[in-house]
Amino acid sequence: MDVVSTRSGARRIPALQAVLEGIAGDGGLFVPVEFPRLDSGALLRDHRAGYAHVATAVLDAFFDVGRSTLHPLVSAAYAGFGDDAVAPLRALGDGTRVMELFHGPTLAFKDMALQILPRLFRVALEKFDRKDDALILTATSGDTGKAALEGFRNVPRTAVYVFYPEDGVAEMQRLQMATQRGGNVGVCAVKGNFDDAQAGVKRLFADRAFAAEAGRAGKFLSSANSINIGRLVPQIAYYCNAYAKLVDDGVVRYGDGVNFAVPTGNFGNILAAHYAKAMGLPVARLICASNSNNVLTDFFNQGRYDARRTFHKTMSPSMDILASSNLERLLHEICGRDHDVVRGWMRALSEKGVFDIPAAAREKLSGEFYADFCDEGETAAAIRRTYETDGYLIDPHTAVGVRVHQKYRERTGDDAPTVVASTANPYKFTPDVLASLTGETEDDAFEAAAKLAEYTGGAVPECIAELKRLPVLHDRVAEKDRLDEAARNFLLKIS
Ligand SMILES: *Cc1c(COP(=O)(O)O)cnc(C)c1O
Image 1 (cartoon, rainbow, N blue to C red):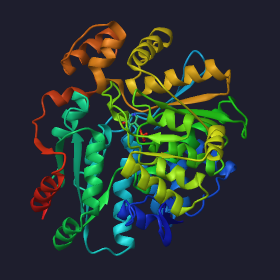
Image 2 (image 1 turned 90 degrees about the vertical axis):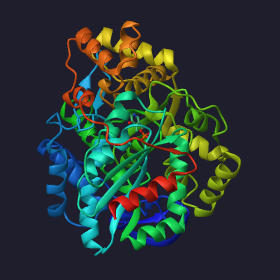
Image 3 (image 1 turned 90 degrees about the horizontal axis):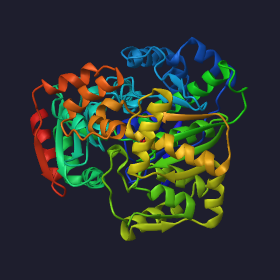
């Protein structure tokens, strides 16, 4: 499968090559020239054979290296997951299914793709006969950073450097990154929010002097953010797998519509669901759930993307984002793949902080997407209520998805089978989860973890408990306009 940039159709390259490049040279994102078709019979067979078979089939539709290369890679990626089903579904009392995407090594859904991505890199470096090595620069709102560090740790011919907002991640998320081991990894806190970190990384990609320096050191720049098509493709698989599971369980017959509710920040996870639908998966509604940073809610409801608003720090920090990168891929489709139109919108966004789409385009989107948000009080109430009614503990990001889906049901009366994406293990966010459940304030994340385990009769995951004992290996902090200094320093270190 070939891909092109959202901003120009001039250069067509294989999707696997785009994995190495990360972002297109013109600042756009790589998108497939067409969507492959899903084979429903094969999907059901693959589902019964196991998650790795579903994921292999999806990857095979985009990356032309053959299933015999992909299957072992995919199997190895998911072998260490904490649940044999990889992405199991749990049924709540009201019939809603929760799709648990957090059974990977860093306890967030980012592992679903970031355990695959480094393996794709190795295949791609060989296939395209690259002599230079990858220097992967990544901005994180909390979970991508750790998942990228863990995925690329000690992977030959790669190095990864992560920027996270200094005061914008949960304590457990920060410690997961600061204690990261590995000879090819680095971490830097940024004095700013996630949007500052993401903008800084984008500037680094556009900085020719930095790219030249990296080149002299035998490195090319790439990204592990969801702007990388190699992040998106593995995420399509779990939507297909969940649908097949519902068919197998007799909840739907193949062809019946299923809704997916997705707690959203950078629009990567929900875009993968949209791609699954574009490939033919019978998806009815996609419910785009935001926290108080509700720029996407307004976009879908009003047809105007307006980033000129207050940035809120919430208990779902991985969704504290106002510049939602992957939306550009959806915009590319709604304007009929007109590169000039996308470029115009993106220019307006960067120059004025706002752009409008035509009413007809908004109408079209509203058939597929429903968007809403919930505030901190509603998020806390959703955590408490889900625990009280179902005995089931959810994290604050998942709680946003659960609550917004409830609001959707109340407002529309649509009771089609729905799967809510659960994006993180609640033990990553212990003070907020504990406070939501019991009202108790406990600022120490480890104390809060112990209390949460006691209250729920659960256990603190070992990879969380051990953070207390591990030495902090990364403590660099950069001003938001000086990310280049930190990146140069890292380049020296690994050269
Ligand atoms: C990254 C993340 C999200 C948001 O996903 P996007 O792909 O950025 O929309 C939601 N929840 C958690 C826990 C995350 O880590």
